Length: 302
Ligand SMILES: Nc1ncnc2c1ncn2[C@@H]1O[C@H](COP(=O)(O)OP(=O)(O)OP(=O)(O)O)[C@@H](O)[C@H]1O
Ligand SMILES: [Mg+2]
Image 1 (cartoon, helix red, strand yellow):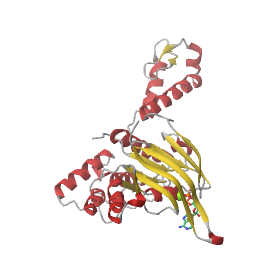
Image 2 (image 1 turned 60 degrees about the horizontal axis):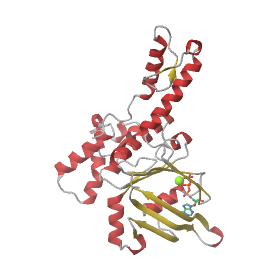
Image 3 (image 1 turned 45 degrees about the vertical axis):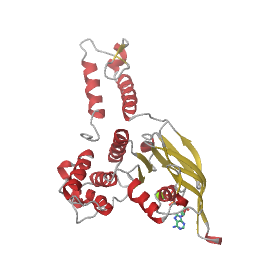
Image 4 (image 1 turned 90 degrees about the vertical axis):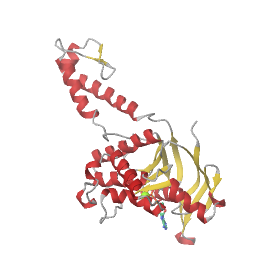
């Protein structure tokens, strides 16, 4: 079992008083291990943003306790809490929040400068390696206005990762993106999660995005309705599942496949596949699947 990094015990958040009182979160118990890739879902107003803000110390609970690596946050002094926010947690926002007058690489460098790093060459080297990780090396010297929404969000992810946090909190990171780009961004986050064991906790309304999460926490009226783990062990397994589905679909869609099926196994998709006498159907099936699934979300992870 991986190390428990964060736990919430009986966390309640109440906004306002009397008639205007809103219970945004009620008696939340949660535990997060290092390396989790979890989605927080639920209807509007169910408490997703409040939960992320409390975990990121942007807001404090009315009641209850948060612990970081076993240490209760209540017992931390201001310096320790500031260190937690600065070092261990990063945010990715729906609206990217990039600084428009800085280039891509300068935006990514910003958290290191805030942290007080002085070695300019080391800062640039670290920032460029993260920019490369999110597949934007060729855009390092561009300004945010010259990028697409998906590229801007990649920069925001790079900026969140540059200080090597333990946990990245992302509040609806794909809400401003089309569904294809949204899928690419979540896959990128998952690849980075698998490679670096950084914990990701993101909120979303999009059921297709939820499907990519390893754990899905469903909130309703400020309470946990469901907490499902182990949905997809890895992106590789997920891709394989998609391939199987598509290959089966390809067989049933194609009358040639259906009529001539003889149960041979497709070596690309590991499912029985129907081959024509000359193997042409198999090639078409393979090429189509390759086009759809073999495009990496990022070119290289260093
Ligand atoms: N600063 C605040 N003052 C008063 N009430 C608030 C405040 N922030 C949030 N709330 C209330 O707390 C509840 C939970 O809000 P929250 O923003 O966490 O929901 P959400 O699940 O993120 O919703 P959405 O999907 O629309 O972003 C809502 O009823 C909201 O109106
Ligand atoms: Mg919200």
